[in-house]
Image: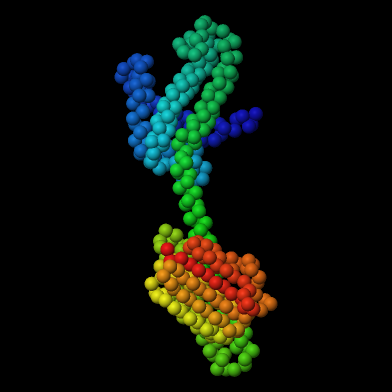
Length: 389
């Protein structure tokens, strides 16, 4: 019993009824001016060209979200689109929606009003008073048992109110819901958001992970050396690396604060000297060779190349320590070739393992390139090729 009465405690039940009544306001005014059965037919004819106007989808969508779901922007109303009609299919569905809303609103209003009138007539007739001329249940004479018809009439009225509200809501989700093009656009937007989150995670992993690795290696080397000069040099390297990490962190936080604003100023391969000097300051013997016009690389290729080189050097310092490292960066006519090699040690993860290696492969794949990581003739090798287009 409580379950049956629960809809009448929700405001949306009555806003749905209001939504249906709004649909017949202007035809009813027209009916007062000229009483004729064809008034409703003409109302349906007028709605057809109105539904072809693209903005009508926005108007009807906002009404449906607010009155049928009780939400204007929340997730419960996201199945109802508020964007203007973009295709003739969208316009056709709006026309069908307007006609269905007019028809259901007309039938619902007649039933609810007449059932209310009939209920009052039944009570009046049972007490010996004259009943009005109801259209649904005409009563003749006075009888006490007329009051027994009040309960079925109220039940029918309740069923009409709840049933019509649920019916028009279901039609709204079907006719005002997203089209295949809308669903594809939403899927693309969701994919872009996931890619952006993945990129932010990689940025944090690469920049902050590199800084922490350099700081740990420098601190350990300074403590082991026991040389004040070396310790001072190590502290300077830690300080410089920390400042660079703070700059990278500020850029990533800028992405989070203003996701729609393009983030500029991220490091590129033109700044690779900073990475190489940081690795040398940590004790690694870096033999670097950069050939070709690095400054003219496309932005995405140069930025991702910088992060790949940063992650490769971080892995060397983290797993191999102060070992000789060979770095080759070559810009050719159709691509960028990047190679980092160091002596193989037992602590370096095998092929396919480690979030850093996965990040390298993901960055290369996003630009249509390839990445190979693993042992090669006694060395550990990271070789990446990125196309310029």
